[in-house]
Amino acid sequence: MSKIEAEQDNLKDSAKEIWGRISSQLKEELPQINYNMWIKPISPISINRNVLSLSVKSPFALKMLNERMSSIITRVSYETNHKGLEISFVVGSSPKKTPVISNLKNNDMYSFDSFVVGPSNELAFAASKQMANFSTPEYNPLYIYSNVGLGKTHLLQAIWSSLVSQKQRAKYVTSEKFTNDYIRAIKENKTDAFRKEYRSCDALLVDDIQFLSGKTQTQEGFFHTFNELFLSNKKIIIAGDDPNKLLEIESRLTSRFQSGLVVDIQPPDYETKIAIIQNKSEKLGISLLPEIADYVASVCNVNIRQIESIVNRLKAMIQLKGGEMTLETAKTMIIGFDEIKLKKRPEPENVITAIADYFNVSEEEIKSSSRSSQIIRARRISSYILRKDLHLTASASGYIIGNKNHATVLNAVKFIENKLISDKNLRYNIQQIRNSLNIT
Ligand code: ADP
Ligand code: MG
Image (cartoon, rainbow, N blue to C red; front, side):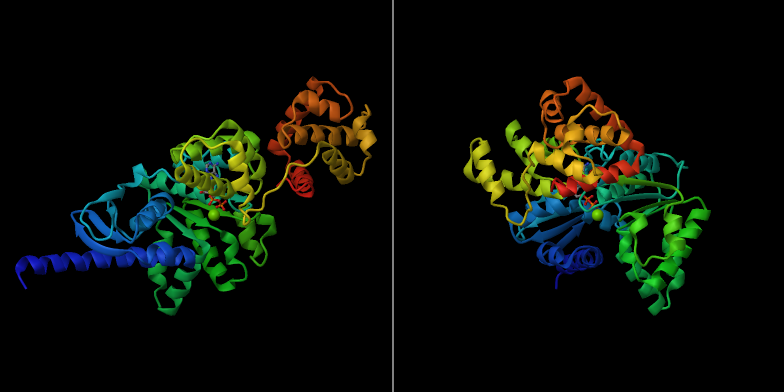
């Protein structure tokens, strides 16, 4: 073998090694189906200076890796000690390069900038920014909770990249990864290394904490890790389910989770959904007619992942068909997405019935001019839902709640909006009412 060939072989080897470390970490973190589909088929070609060239099978795979995976690949390559590594994907094994991941700064998929802020998530956003910006945050730990697909992981990753770009040692793990690391450390007698890794960071971010459920031994390990970091004033950021509803997690842990700041993320309101739809479609380089955006916002009531999936498909459709998409075509195809549970907007009268039922008052009372506090509350929430979820005008809403004028409706909506910021109970009530109306 010539010297050059030997060198090339060396290069090949180290590309293989580097990719080996990165991909085995990805294997642990990604759902198996995603790993098998997108990561497993990748093969390393070469490493040249700091550019790792990887070969992918098709332009479609390239596109998916670009759009969906670049953030996690960047983070993992960073965490496996390949700082500053540039990854360039190549379709087939031709040397023509298409760089996709240059460095952390260019990777804004999960950044604060790409996070659309609205009333449903502004508290969680502000608290996350605080964690990212201040060396000693006012509250520690920060616990973020919500239903799935509402932005917890996005915020954690945004905090993580921001800290890392400020040269802080931040470690992001899912609680599953923590569990695996912990168990492996014990099995292989490497608890010292484990401690060093987890307790020497400036910030620890743990995602999906609910998966510690029932794992008593790991909880013990997490308890000590938590305490040590906490006592040395390191930042701790946790995301997961409602901390009051964590089953089979020791109370000494759940009480610690709640000892700093606990913030929730609610499903986005209509305006925020529209902003997210615009933001996502701009990123994909398409522009949707306002009535299509309105339609998407009205049928997507579950979470933001669902919005993304619809916008992605609309883009695919626009590319296939060409030209501008009409509301009718958009509707027909969106209705065809059977894996997406789409819900129709309820009729205004059903809203009044549901709210009357919920508060145990009569519909007539809501429509009357009674000033009893119970009825005023039901009437205000009716205004709020008619405006926010059904998007009726203030005058139309006023008509439904018994011929009230539009100013009464606007005041009621404002009142509820203000109260929602601090009143957990009210948030719960509204959530329950929305559930009963199939709105969220
Ligand atoms: P969770 O961790 O709460 O299940 P994710 O953070 O994974 O949710 O969010 C699901 C998807 O929705 C992600 O692609 C994320 O980028 C996007 N997303 C969530 N909230 C927002 C937001 N406020 N603005 C823009 N994108 C968002
Ligand atoms: Mg998540």
